[in-house]
Length: 108
Image 1 (cartoon, helix red, strand yellow):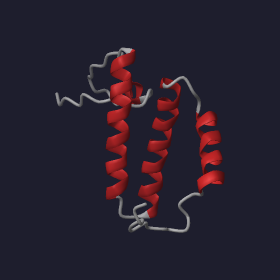
Image 2 (tube, rainbow, N blue to C red; image 1 turned 135 degrees about the horizontal axis):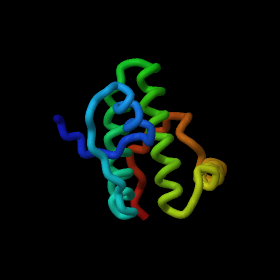
Image 3 (cartoon, rainbow, N blue to C red; image 1 turned 30 degrees about the vertical axis):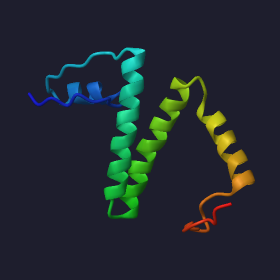
């Protein structure tokens, strides 16, 4: 039986069970969960970087967004609060739509 040793979505055990396969899971401690959410976020970002078409990119972005929801809760917040902070920062400093690439800034 292959080892996966990674955080999976909540319904994955049921999906595996419905396919008739044997599996083993355990519930992570809060500290382990925080570590695994961070690792999973990095994994999904790597998968996003490797996408070759818009459909796959959107799938990976959805996974990243789900993990952002989890990370917000882990940090005592909510996705809505993260969105408020994002909007405030965009109003103050802008977004990334203009594709500006900073090369250098003169020293004072």
